[in-house]
Image 1 (cartoon, one colour):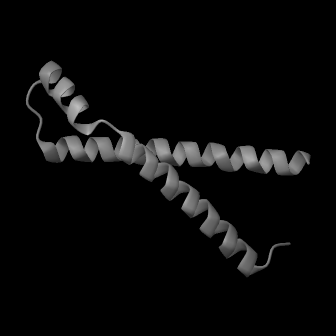
Image 2 (tube, helix red, strand yellow; image 1 turned 135 degrees about the vertical axis):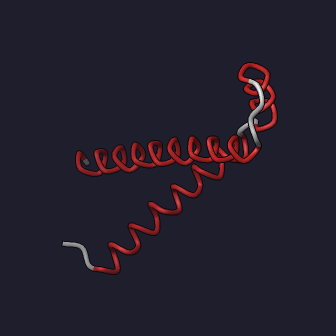
Length: 80
């Protein structure tokens, strides 16, 4: 059984891994290029709508990647 301190530490590690994944995706994401391509194909889109859509997409991908990472690490620890 885990103590509250261990659970809090584990949550903090998972949160830091999420922030790291989110930050890396956010830094390398080509916002301006994709905005130009998308607006050329679809037409006018406000920057607010674009930012909301892109941020939601980045958050969703970050959550899925973090969940997969946590699952993978838990599976390896359970086998070992």
